[in-house]
Image (tube, rainbow, N blue to C red; front, side, top):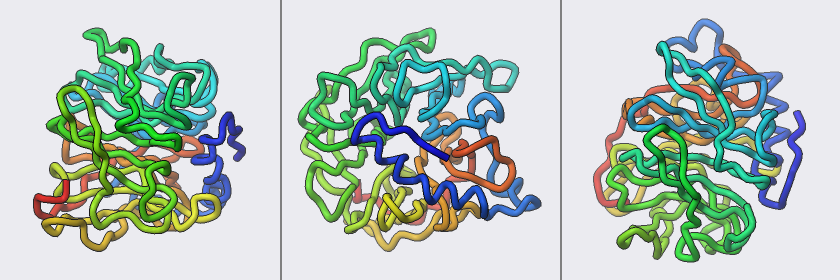
Length: 308
């Protein structure tokens, strides 16, 4: 597997080449067990022989948007793709019109369906990968993208924007705001239409890479990706419960392919089915290609309020 890097920001998936290649030889899900815990999303349409990462569904369940690093037909770099639900199946996969010649990735619908958030390293940003949002049109298309500005974006890379269900907070990863390690998780609060004043997610960040996060039950728990070193080590999804003011010790998400021997990342809660989670990974079966989109149950939430 080879991923072409189009900018310094492209190291995110480029760094995963070794773990992903290893996973091709030793995926951990048994062929007889997968039906009980997860299923592939959109075989041949969403999940294909190419690399698909971080899928998000519109709140009405009629549209799905995801990122791909190597699917042909996009505007260039990494592109966003969209499919529509027809006859209970995802159909008509096509690149999203807001794609640029640069990298456009990590999509996330807001819970009210008004916005699609994503990152891009297109010209005109603060530096590296910046967070943007675009208004969602009634027909499922998108309006002009808006940079979230210097209150969120730094000279480094910002990834995986995740708005809270009430729209009052934004969860994201950054390597340009200091913190405990290379990539850390931050929360920014909304003031009117602007997010700002980011602060570290309490109890989660480490000297390692902590990124790709989603709140569960309005922040009573959090699921996120961690790697000892994204350039050479596997990536695993972890779940931490809120203990009132900070998150407690993180435990692996209980899905058989989340072994710590390959790459499992990019969790997104389905707003239309809040008990279900979309993740990007590689399983023994079913499998369409490199990284696929899978659907699994949201893990049990036992935490308290107070960490958001």
